Image (cartoon, rainbow, N blue to C red):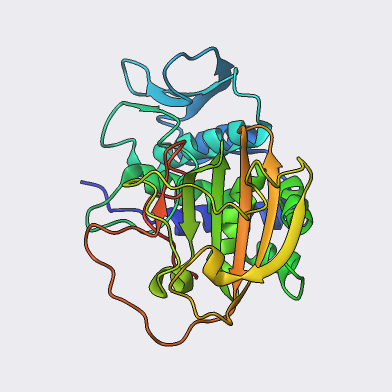
Length: 305
């Protein structure tokens, strides 16, 4: 029986090796080469022998062993238009290889299994663990902090991070939520309705979250992403938090930023608020800070490091 491995520790170990060989300014991570080389050096008896794109109908990524289980292969959906999504998929399957390959011989991961994040609810979730590994490998926290510390958050700043790490804008925004110094909520919407929403821990505890998994939630009519107001260009303004969260005090401000995420076909809205009064609520067992109907990008809430 093998010891349970820690996703972030595994990713950080690889990052240390990459820093030693290539220096700290080495991004984006050449994840396909890393998966091949690292597995062949460390696990010579059963390495990853191939990483390639295929026209996959029902899933975005796969990790599979041959009959002898002495070689493994990573496949990703070549039809996906987002290069950042493909990179994350390969890193996700590499995570399955390092963390879970002794449990089963094949991992077929759909859109709802990849690019998720957040804390689990009790039992281990191998898809979450693979995502934690991928996020940490592609966007190491120490380097990510260096990119954003002291900077005012904007989609331009998050776009810089996405370009640096070769990931999607959504992935970079989710990573920022984990270390956001204020309450922050990320919303993805289409046709004036929310697809999913992700709140950081401070926002969730103050009641600033949207239960999109359980409810169909329409955007506020004054929201920049609403069809009445959306120009198709990045927008930002300051307004009252009550527009989005009726329980907030009348004087509570909120900064609202929007940008169309073209590869995903939805609009991202980032909401940033000051800290709330200490009127936090308990998290009920069936409540989640993150809800999702597209790719379960954030499915179990997030906690800052």
